[in-house]
Amino acid sequence: MKRRRFRLKTKIIIVAAVAALIAFAVIFFNNAAAVMLAVGSAQLRAMNTRAVKEAAEEAFGNTSYEDIVDIAYADDGSVAAITARSARINAIARNTAYLTQSRLGGLSAQGVEVPLGAFTGIEALSGYGRAVNVKLVPVVSAECAFVSRFSQAGINQTIHSVYIEVVTDITIVLAARTERVLASVEVLVCESIINGKVPEVYLQGGLLGSGALVP
Image 1 (cartoon, helix red, strand yellow):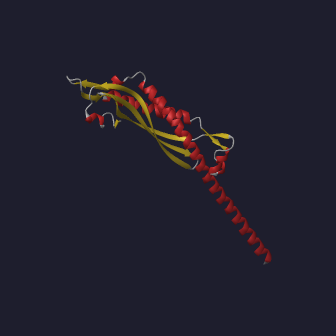
Image 2 (cartoon, rainbow, N blue to C red):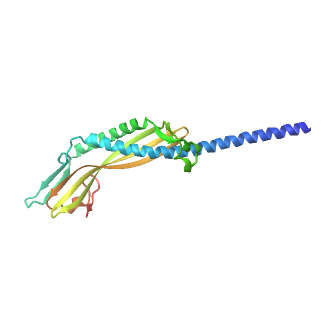
Image 3 (cartoon, rainbow, N blue to C red):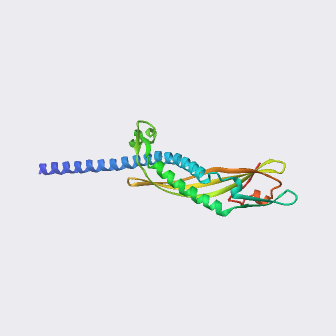
């Protein structure tokens, strides 16, 4: 009888120990994965900024302000109309989105450098230790929009700045966990000084996207 009780207690202790080890391993893995995703997403944001800037530069090439914006003047020298060349703008936006996805995919394929401290699952130690290259599986989509801003340059002179805003939606897949990273990068693509009084309808937005008169 005593032997049976001893065996039963031993089995209970072993089962409890195994369960505790499994629970510890699960908690450790989840914490480590969370820290690794945080470190990885920070590096992917930096990669994304680089990818967007390179993509915008390539997509625009030698495109000038006059290639995407037409300005018509009235007889008195004031600005009668400012119109965007939609076909050209849409083509550039599509090309920028495609190039951003392609470049970010290429950069992220190289992996991210994660310090050994991140594998402990302790956030305070995530920046310490030798860097280890970790392969992440990012799923990337990008959307582009043009933003138009006006600022005063002098009497009857206005600077019209055109930016392209690229919003990327990155889903990082790491083992059994995923992380969604939304990033927005704005790049100045061209600008020009407009001579003549610009109507308020243009200064307050509507052309190319959002606009604002910056004092």
